[in-house]
Length: 125
Length: 138
Image 1 (spheres, each protein chain N blue to C red):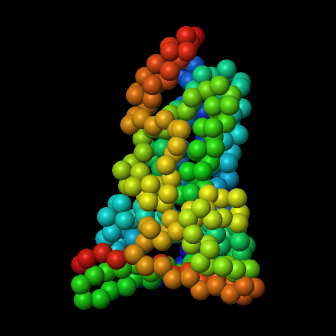
Image 2: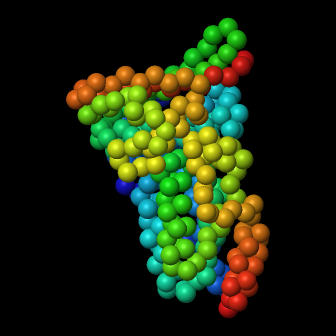
């Protein structure tokens, strides 16, 4: 089983992760652990998960994304999903996914704005 | 692994990574048949759900695809066959929110919504065959 390499970048206080186009389940699962470890290690305030390369979001992938956002939330961070293609949004919705409680943005720039505002409101760093 | 000729092909599923092989194979096939990007994504996502079902519930199985054509339309048919435990109650498995695996229970009903046609044949202890089709106008 070949896991793809995923890079977690830290920009200021935020983690940025770009998902590969066609990740297997092991890669998606590894991403979750890697992100949570990086949250702790870098004392990050949030996560931007860019899925602009992702070609299809099936129920396992979508569930893991929602779970990861919830876990990041438990650690005191906020998650913004960015770059969802129209075809992926249509398909995920028809499949039955709402991405409840997960913030989304068109691109990473807007995601960083959202996270900055969220932090400022909390009296942030 | 993937084994293809023009207009049909098959992928054996006995490793988690084969779910990715199924997705790639079906993406290539659906694009070659001229489906638009949204329908390609629907078909690939449905294939991913059904391939994962085989891997998780039956362990091994096979996915076959073939091109369909009639006077006014072109289609793709995917058949997922396994000799696993079978689905005890197909009616219940098609209910929204039902799952035996701790999933979200949207696998089968969600997959049906993504495709135009879906047929399930399952016998407890014998296995499951699921056929799905998607059509486009010529």
